[in-house]
Length: 325
Image: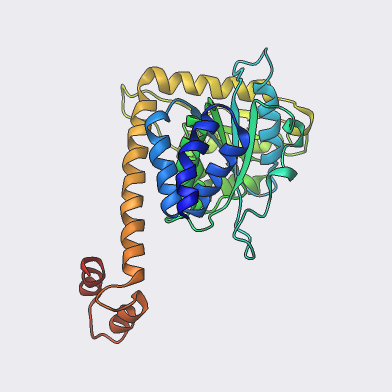
């Protein structure tokens, strides 16, 4: 561990100079958690914050990986409104029960960009990070920004609570659905309506696209509007066929328009301030949970919980006992 910690500043400097292997090692340290992750985070934090993050989420099978790959290709085009020279893709995957690593590895994703030095792709799993993905992902984004990535695309494999939290922390959040009423309902139930800045109906060459478009418009009509005088953004609905690169120009334009809107209105600065507040609170909670779960007055969390279950200790007294030690 000591050798690894001594090497981290050198890895950080190398990553900042464009060394991809060093950047990958820093992200692995973030995933593992512990003292090494804290050291990486401390180095990255002062020089991060210069990039722009786009979250891409939606129901499994919606074609998010194909869409993300196509969006990267669009952004790498000189004619794109989002023309970008340094892009990172952070693919949030479930953890393998055997290795703790991401089940869907980097190499099976977005092979079209494998030889593009301007695109860095990384799959990420929870592993041992205190607080899980909700805390590991923001740190990973900061490392990528510190390494000079101007755009970070965060793609999730599902729409569970953690995935929604992670992707909802992006500057612009893209919610992907497929033609058919079921996905629109799922988007509404999963809370995606609240975090969506842009909707994408992917696989729009299938039957039911017009119905899904209409359903989403109806849901947006019912979602309400901000108070008078406050800047309002109505999420646009973009139709794409990712595997033929159809509609990607429109998606890039929608993302660019949203970025301009939240930047000019001051919403971007407010969102980022709120994210700092939310992250700090999650770190405090995770730290207290970790402390309570290790040892307090010689008792483990399970032992104190047994006292509560036996009604020999009330929950508030138990929590205080664990936290105060």
